[in-house]
Length: 223
Image 1: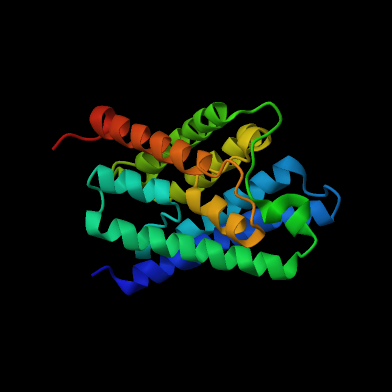
Image 2: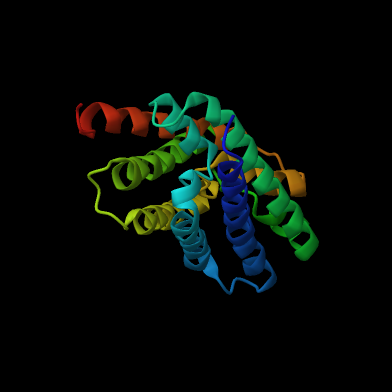
């Protein structure tokens, strides 16, 4: 049975990610663009960095089904723990989305409570490709900075937070820069906006798996 503390940690971490990240999009909307793209990207990067330092020693701070699937596929975590982790992540994201619905009622129709969506002239296939690339960079960094025992101690939170920040700076206008099915699922559930939702499962899972197997096959220390 999966350690309950780990599941609560994943719930809290994913709640924080969605509440602050998607919440920054809602705040940007009601403040007429006061945060801008960089402010939104920084909110996501900083909250992930904080959660890694706060809960990394408890659950590993996956807070992302794509990360959990990549770790389970490469046997970096017990496969039986993967589904409980993902359920906790989706639950945390959903509660965050519903909380945002209470706080930002005008952002429900305005920006779908920060739900990710495809930009102008970005089709389903292009969206999957963009999300796969962005998540590849994220998961590759997770493996290099957090999973690999040779990595310098204490820098995983900073490295992973920064890759999320720069991924959103590039991918935000294209797909919303999700890299995380739970991050999209929570606000989608609360706002009822499900357009192209599968993009945010297919792209991140594919990108995460490619990054994980590449790192383990080429760069990981051989036993």
